[in-house]
Length: 428
Ligand SMILES: [Zn+2]
Image (cartoon, rainbow, N blue to C red):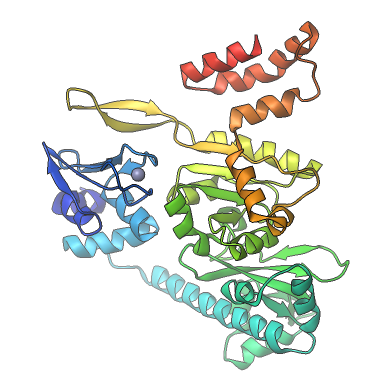
């Protein structure tokens, strides 16, 4: 028996869930209010002792076993949930090998280095003379001091060895600072700082730990944005900027809004729109969506309206469709049995931004205006319809047949037959 199975046989899911959710017995099962979406009227959250599983029949539609419940509830990775539940079940996990222990220690050192670097950059932004240019930039962009401290924004001096000197002075090894991605090796030996003369955005994981950095130039230098390289802690493609500060709101509102840039996230949160995260680049990845799926199944994409942004939106959509494919979830039939029904695993909408405007600008003008755009966001397929037919005359036979040619591949992907029929009719 695997450790996971052993833990499952020793724990009762009803006991574990009861620690977080008030459950009432209802026939063979237990019901309560779902902790993963806002609901107070009907207890749509069901725990099934027979199958040791849970499912929400309300807005979020999530479900799974005791592990997925703890992962969602505690915002944990699987390995962390395993530790917690193993302890609770009194199951010994295999002792870590020396290599694993060494790796864990190394990661811990990298985390410490990131914390020290973030603090160093932050102090420079707030206090240094040179940091004035970054302070002025933020003031010009309308970023408040509360936002600067909530996101621990920083400034990297325009110098070759400033951060390196600071960290080495605090006792960290150059080799570790290099692994953390903060310095770069010189060809002739020695190291220099990766981030120089830039506004710094510490990038934090779901639990608020600094795992990497983004840096923006304050002049016309290139690249405009520079991120940490891939490190043992940081992989840009599986991180969302702002997730640590957004996770509560995403859960409460049962919706995540995904934007492209750091500044969009800052401005949204500053205006109390806290369910916003950034993909930090142009393409939304599968790993990023999987991260968000722990919090909600409703995604709204607000990607920049310029041409590059349009391409990114379409690429993002392709990823979204691949990631959020069908999943089998238990659904009780009228006879009270559990059957299985395939259902689409998420709802994705697209915000159409006003031409040439970033979310940052829209929100700064009016948060009501932003909320209206979010409300008016189109379901993915509707968005495709508009995007792919905006240049066609749909009253003409020629325009119609071209629309069919462009849209049929998308309509074929729709798994819900009622929905599919709806769109086929729309085309005829
Ligand atoms: Zn729910």
